[in-house]
Image (cartoon, rainbow, N blue to C red; front, top):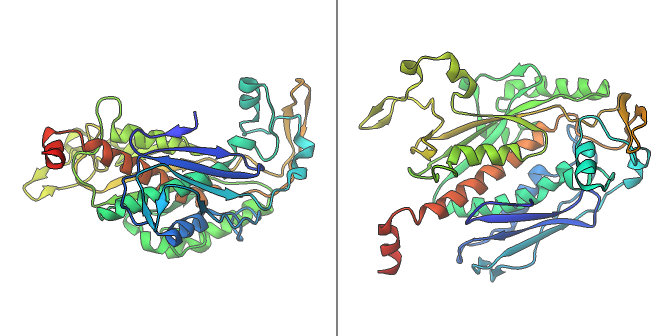
Length: 358
């Protein structure tokens, strides 16, 4: 399954070391002004390179092939492509027949019977570049309604930022997308230490969506929180999701966890902006947990496709902490879900149809 969404729907294609990656976005209303520089800026936020990410050098230059005329969407499908420029498939020759621990090699091979060993092929995190392109289109829709999404890193390894100290504006200028300037060096040092030890570490991404209208979400089987969780868990290396109080809510009593209501709105936002699978108008707050990057340069035990036991010793270029760039991908997936829910919500009441057709 390579597609996601109902009304706002996108399909991605391409492999880590293939010729190109890209996406086809369907369901975009006509008349939206396409800011190509904004789309490229989104790609640049996620692209590899830099001291705290993989050293693979890719420009990730996006090219729009269809669905846009004279700077505006036409209502037809939007196709976008970016060409790989810096593959080094030879780095993977030594793992051609073996399964890298922590990767999808074992499961992909047993499911499909084909082993694309070049950087993981379709299971590589490089696939997420196409998601960011689709997410940029979704963000342009959300911008028309003044809906904003921000993200950043609130924890790396065992170093955490308290929610009261979150600064989403700072994360936009931080090399490691940190949510507080006082933690930039702490996060960087942890990443450097892991790299020096030929290891990797995990992290937590915090997301916040503001100016959300009441009513987004399609109960019972397409709830807003369920689809947001689905979207986040589809990202490579994500292992858990929290909405609002999340796990902490199990330690509270109902009297503590309930968001009491006044004629000015909710007193608190323990729910994370979602009740009964439907947005309640408050900010949507989420956290996404990313595991340590499975590509490490330590010798590990594994087997090959012939079931022989052997040692795995990786080469190549890998992120010591995939969570940092994962924050951009999570932000993009949230935008895609919200754009989809906005379009779906148009048919929730007959009054909405009458406004258009009567």
